[in-house]
Length: 511
Image 1 (cartoon, rainbow, N blue to C red):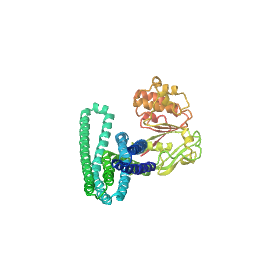
Image 2: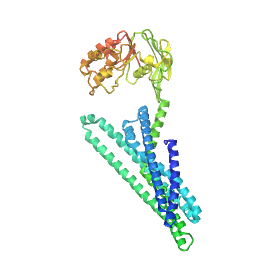
Image 3: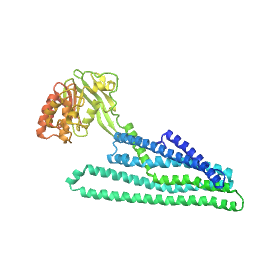
Image 4: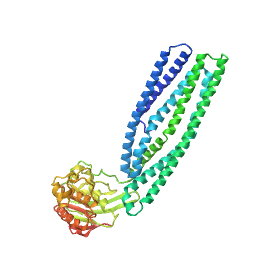
């Protein structure tokens, strides 16, 4: 219930109390009408009130369920993006999973609250009208939730297994679609199609087994409830024949006894209809727990440069990495690194893959907090520097530049103050400057370089393998642009290719 808003619980409780009062009033009026007491207009009025209460509850439950689904989707997307959750599992949870919680919030929970209120009200009223009947109802009522719980435990386990299978099928299918081109090239598309077909068949079989248990459980609950009503109705009928109770009391008992069991039966059927809901909520909780655990153990990102001090002018300020170590769970990525880059100096960082070159740039950018050591800019600790004033002086070219919806010109113009079209033309993107169609990996890399080239106000240039995805012909054009980009700026360049190393003042080897 921790996923449910308290206001929703209060609304359900109030509507359940109104439902109990209307049920009692309807039985009283109907018994009186059948014995020639009250007018039928009273019965019509009570039935109208009950219809309004039922409609109000349905409207409120649907509205609250919709808002809860929207909130769950946001939580799942936020947690998945923060934890690196596999895309297929996250998509399955957002699309199919969150929709599956609606029967739980809008069906099972309202019926559960009604089942906790209406039977109590019915037993209380029967105890004043006919105590023996009230005792029979009181003794047989627990049979319905007991049998429901016994069958529900098995249904819950089967539903969890079914949901886990669906998540696996969804994740595998999405991965296959993403890699379909590669699978076709290597002739493995047909084999993967057979695998997906087999997984889908296994999930369908698991679904049918779960539905079989649900239908059998509904039969058990109906049998228990019908038998319990018979245990009340038969003695009352015999006592009526012998004059032990009046006709109005007997009618009242016969009308109220089914109302005592009906909410429990409905709650049982709604539980099986909404059985996927708790499994999905458990999956959401597990995802958020995993995200919180990773946030507690992984280096904190995006909160290094948050201080009140404006960043020093990088045209004259030195950059000093002082005994910095970065640790991830189970391993040290950057161990005790020191680096001094003078103002205007261009430094290349080389070393084998996995030694921490890209992580070093992330530390300088302020994306990763080192486990020990510090980064000094003009003698000021980077953690004390205002982020905006620091970012305005940076130009960053990552290994895989991020492109946003829009034209190539729009992507190059992000944060730039220079001539976007000139930067695009210099990197051979002039014919694509107004295009929005997908770009190749080399073209994306050149867009990232053009974006940095258009940053006239950037004083520190950070580049991560700027020519790694370029062919020989394109590399020469990029090197010319890089030469102009490096001119007059402080630069730290992660590089493997010798051509880039010829453009720097000093080479630092890691590892």
